[in-house]
Amino acid sequence: MTSTVLILLGPPGAGKGTQAIRLATALSSPHVSTGDLFRENLGKGTTLGLKAKEYMESGRLVPDELVIDMLFARVQAPDCKAGFLLDGFPRTVAQAQALDKRLEGQSVRALNLSVADAALIERLTGRWTCKACGNVHHEKFSAPKVAGRCDKCGGELYQRTDDTRAVVEKRLAVYREQTKPVEQHYRARGLLVDIDGQRTPDEVFGRMLASARGEGL
Ligand code: AP5
Image (tube, rainbow, N blue to C red; front, side):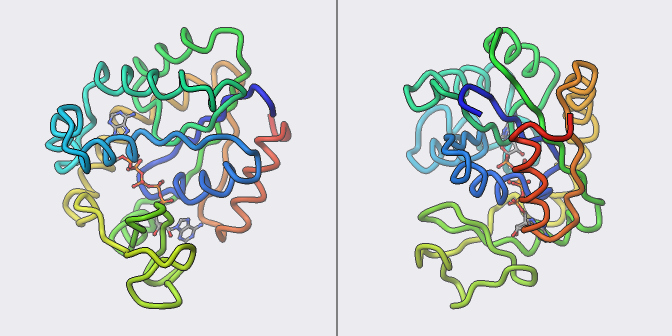
């Protein structure tokens, strides 16, 4: 897996972040999440973060030019030289085309998680994220041992402002319209593996790890 770029695709709430954290450890590959990069920028009050805020809070995609520049700057860092794991990018066909150019000659694999809409809404409206380490819990499916505290690091858990039912429904509509076509971009190139995201987190992880290591294409 040394110089492979792994792309995690799937709708909001499919489990990309949950699995990305585990895969990054198992594969010793950096986890690059565009959503996390925007939230970090917002936390620091940067111009980029403030520009992204209005799009994120209303469930719309941040304009391609802002995302692509930020992502390419991140993957230029030395830790990404031997490959990396993308979570939340590409999300439009234009982003996928820009990434193709950037990665010319590198090995790419896209893992596509599918989950029904009703389950996605339940997952996102019950999600609690750790402020300190980004680990995600769910109030029903993976409740923290101590209420309000992350099992992994003890950090404070919070609910994202875009995880209200109304914003989740908007995010799902945007996904269907703008991100779903990205699947076909990779399927047509023989680079996509479909994965049932409605199994348990451990089962999903086993399948993703096997696919990341070369099975299933
Ligand atoms: P981003 O942060 O990327 O959010 P997202 O793609 O909408 O994905 P989520 O983080 O909501 O879901 P996930 O699939 O990671 O699910 P998770 O593992 O947490 O983007 C946010 C915003 O930033 C966008 O709306 C946009 O505005 C902007 N943005 C980011 N990237 C962009 C780009 N490239 N272009 C333009 N704009 C961009 O799991 C969800 C819950 O389910 C958790 O509670 C978890 O515990 C639970 N769960 C996970 N797996 C399972 C399972 N197998 N069974 C039961 N429960 C499970």
